[in-house]
Length: 79
Image 1 (cartoon, rainbow, N blue to C red):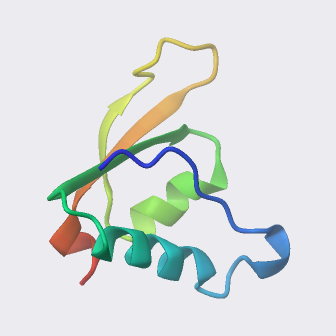
Image 2 (spheres, helix red, strand yellow; image 1 turned 45 degrees about the vertical axis):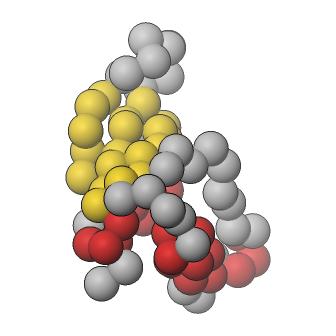
Image 3 (cartoon, helix red, strand yellow; image 1 turned 120 degrees about the vertical axis):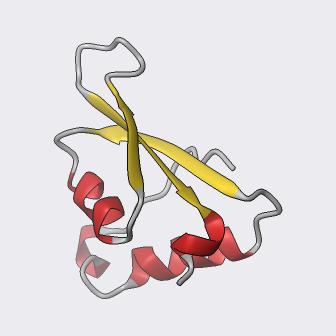
């Protein structure tokens, strides 16, 4: 399950909204694994680490900005 875009308004961050959105998305997924790409300096990288997502690769896109590819097994991400 590739996740292409997810964001929470700064006014609502820190209240579990992003975690609930992500859990809802993963619960409805038919795939067993999910992955996404985020900027290495993006606050969302820490968000995914806190939720137990694993870093699969860095700078995978060869872009100027450092990127991290995160992945998870969906059952693990819901526990």
